[in-house]
Length: 337
Image 1: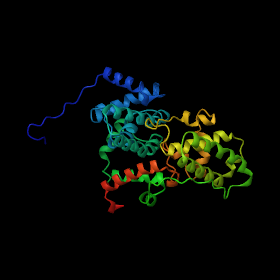
Image 2: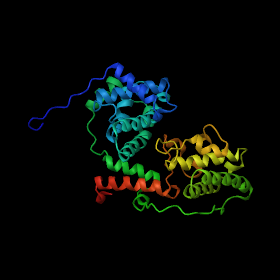
Image 3: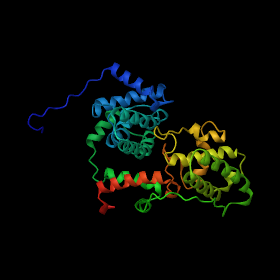
């Protein structure tokens, strides 16, 4: 019920022209650099449909709850399309959230929370769009007949589990600190003799990027990641491959894991990051065996870079995780963990 004298807020009407104007503004902004194309235009049209007709009525209002509804239910159920097309949605959504929050003057901390929800729900979204599922009217009827699931995890607990994945588990999350990573030498113990020359070349290149662009913490994280890969799967480094591209892959993984590159607020593009190495183009494929050697399944990252190792994260990244941890623990109730 409304209080005395209360008025129901008027729901704005969005014409086709309004939607096109908003889409053009987004794709013309720095937030959408490199995204303007047929697929992303079509995806955004559906995102606007959700925001205007099914969401709050304002397509620029995005919260973790809206993200959850869109990725876990609405898009897989309502949009009939091939997985290759649908799989591009999370990347577009991240950019549109940044744009929308900038337009609305939303605090960066709230934007980070909303983007974290995309990271959280993307794996399930990617699995769902590749599975057999009911869509359209059939899904609606099934939903009406299906009993409610009382065992669904609370939102805060689900978000905490997403943080667990980044640092290696709940115990690691609860014990997390934001102390800077030390200035640490490369660990050669366990590295096979025959691959040491190649490892040395990759190490020198990574150190150069850290000195020219990054910092000591990133250098330590890159050294740890490279050392573990060399011990975990030395065969990677016995193949004929460019050490510079190997260094680029190590650098890219650590920068992505720490949100140092690629984000609008990071101020650093992948191209700029890899410039000292003379490497262009994607290095994600080169990174896959390195990730596997570190115990990370690259095919379950779905756009995120959660390495499951707190000691590969900089103090800045860990401070951000701690802030989110404390907020979700406060909401969820620490005694339930």
